[in-house]
Image 1 (tube, rainbow, N blue to C red):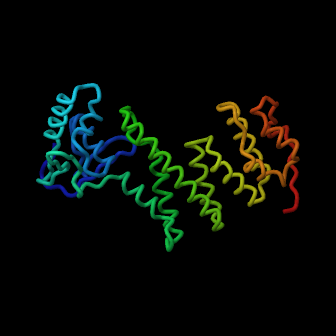
Image 2: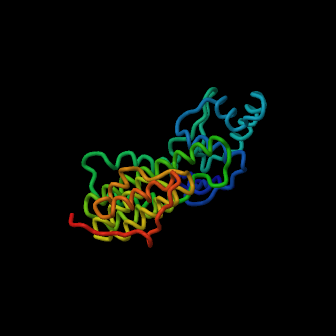
Length: 270
């Protein structure tokens, strides 16, 4: 375990846990990793009983408290700089420790404020696309699962907004890249499927838009027994025979869906 002065300490929660000091990976025992992860997720001072009760839920309060003390004793202080700070009532990460998820969420929360330039949207999108994996992959503690879902939802929502903004600005290639990435992560996310349809219609690719609609409707029917919303169906009504489109959208209620090859697509003047 490295303890000499090495520079800033960083904690990564995306994919799997990793902690570095000055670029060098610190080798921590699992018990210390869990404490650091829990504190990194909460990003504020947390009461000791809450930490110990969350990390050791199957033991009594006395033993859980003892386990927390043992874990804290095993957390190093590289170069004399603490990673974890403690008081008689609370535990928290030192303010000098940078956590990757915090930076991503902070950037996502501020990027749509007035005055932000378009390149900022693309920059944040590229970062979120690069972080295409879940949080703490392979960790199944209840607190880790909850944070993993929160991160996933925030990431997808921000990418949705970026895709919409890029499309509105006429940057269809970038909007398409963002939308395809979101659909790969969450195929049943209708807001992104609608964006894909709108992009293709805007570029005159009516058949491609209809193919996306059909594939989404069939998968939605198969996996959850639902149909696309009227908003999504309405995107194609100016281009497709209404009876055929409604027939396909209603396949979840028991009608026979049309495949893209069986559907008749007719483009009308806009």
